[in-house]
Image 1: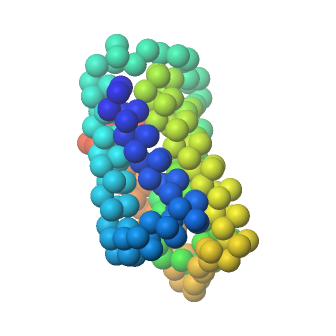
Image 2: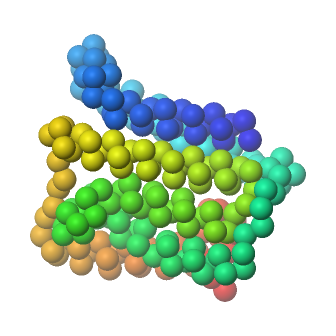
Image 3: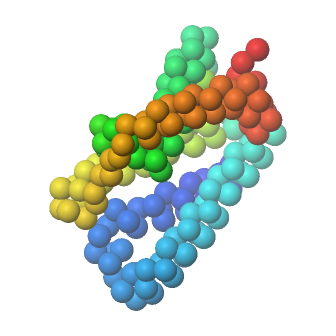
Length: 193
């Protein structure tokens, strides 16, 4: 569980830097934009890799992550429903249309929905650390982005409605493909019969 917690600390920690405009400006002025982005990406990737590896290790040895609560049977249905918009939102973050304009920050919303959805089906300590950590970071980031948006440091992108159609069709297709094949193959937990 230590690797998972270290990964969360690194991943969330590096993502706090852009929420602090003065700190970000100082780092960019010292290193340059390209070096800052490169270092940011490498540190974020290391944190993400530690999260994935650490969580995987804990899942292989369930005794290392005590069960803190037992999710309700109906939680699975809530999770499936909350996950439905996640993939379209992820696509809308990179292919902005009206969804991006309405939701404002689709990537952050997708992370919040993903984390919240999984709290309905997982009650072990490692899962709670992962999903509550990511939910807390996404909530903090949303407030921070709103503040930076008001200061003119962040702009919300929007685009043509055809991007929304693409995001919805491709996102829902990915949702069903991931639920049927990806989740069992990558996570080891079947979602659909």
